[in-house]
Length: 154
Image (cartoon, rainbow, N blue to C red; front, side):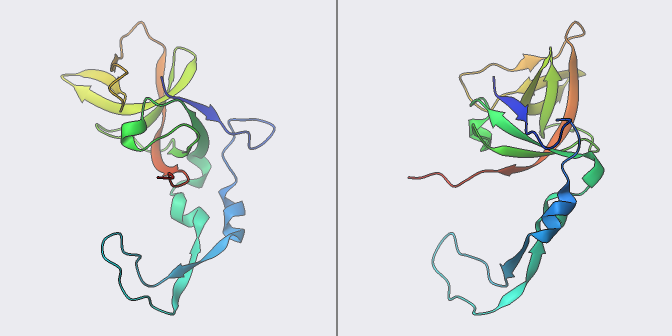
């Protein structure tokens, strides 16, 4: 199971992250794109500066960050140690990754609704989907809106 651990961000671990503090992180944003195919000529100018708080967060009062532990979502590019940006104000819809509180633990899975039944799907063939039943204590805690991780070394 790929679990998510709340990143301690204050004395109360489930308080929203202070994304306004990211406003002080004003980074340059280049006007040109970096090619992931054939190289392209570089532009020698900046387009603007980017405010990471505004870029990553739509709803600051309902947005949280959690760190991932486990590999059940690796094929969805969610890896052990990644940081998830989760928005509790968004409605979970079919096919979106969500963080759920399931039987006393946080987990991240893809939400699926099939014939009026809810399922939590892993993105790793070594794990099985979880059919959500009435006898489970399951609450969708929020929708994953960003996954932050370092690039993989090849």
